Image (cartoon, rainbow, N blue to C red; front, side):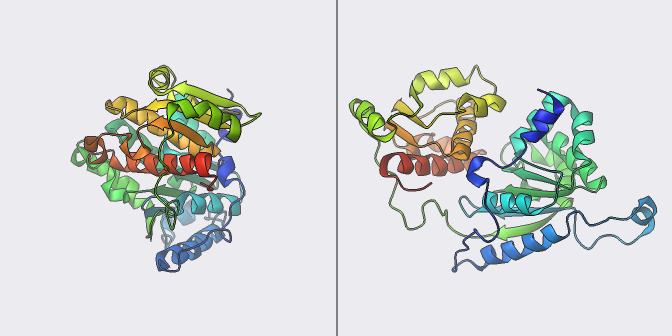
Length: 331
């Protein structure tokens, strides 16, 4: 793929293709949600404003705010909705992608070509900012620093404050300098609240019986394109496909059916599956499944370990897609 094709793909998924600040529905019981909308609107107004020439940047006063804004909050409080709304409101050129998509972009183009390509942008949005290894820490701290120095505005979402990225995953203390560089780029906006996907809704639907799947599939997806897989075979197949291509793997499907879902025991397999869950949620692909319920998809050790936030996000999103597939509740 050409550089232009790769950059064109850095935009919100169809799920967030038409969102706006006005379509965000703050929880009245959580004032930080409405406050976050106002802060992002103010941040949007400053995107594209002249930063002055080289001499003014060298000798002039420092800007009152940092180069970026960082949305910190739990699962399902609307961080991605707000980040996509900022992208839609801002002037271009601009980019929107997940953390993994940017690391994949560097892998495809090289670091220097990625910096050159994005340095002319007015805004770069990074969704699901996560640092899972030292290499990513150094890579993203350098990328964010160079883009900020070039005058690019940055916006990110995560479930972890910038200064705490990497904690519980690797020896973060050894890379505190790089982590601090990341933290220094952002003004943090806290968004409190409960997962909107579960707010006021019943618990996750019980899994179907395997012998029921064919009939339910025909009823729910009649005439559609459906990916039907034995869950174990699916996990083995994912090991042979680079996660950057999972978006293409599910391109064009209207639903998925998984037979005999079981608890994933391997950490590497679980992390690959999280990426697939995110891509399915991006595309709003409903799920029918038999086997264990999705809240038993990962082991207790995984749900309490360094990657717990990834796994909780995956369970939340898969549960929403299962509700959509079985009970037609919007995800």
